[in-house]
Length: 156
Image (tube, rainbow, N blue to C red; front, side, top):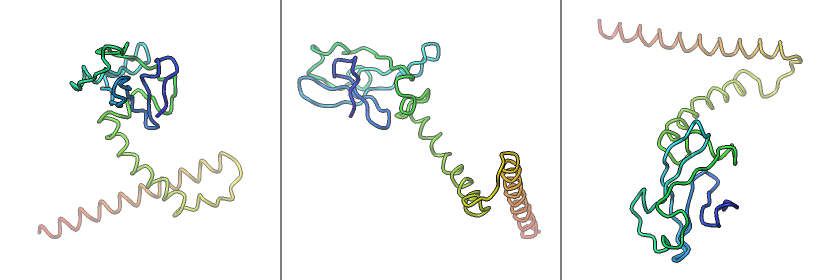
């Protein structure tokens, strides 16, 4: 866990962008509650775990962030802190759609031969990529139409 330099070594984060607070008395680490993205400030808002999830923290009396919210600028580390917080359910749903995109990227690289390409020039490469994507779409349309025809024959 990495600690924020300007947060009295009480607030820290991990590689996934989850924000934690450190109980100075018990030495425990608690996940802070996500309070939303503030677009006008370009900050992520996180709420003290005592307030957000009702955790009893013995260090509340010594903690300057007890029962308060903190704001983290997304410019602090753009890879970890995004407008959609990585600890939120929305992030999970968005991240799940990534696998379908990765399948397309894999097909372009392996099936259509873009891993070992011998094309020079951006115009030629764009044209070949476009053709590969068009072929993929046409194949999917053909598969869908074939499936519809088979269902119609089975129903009749």
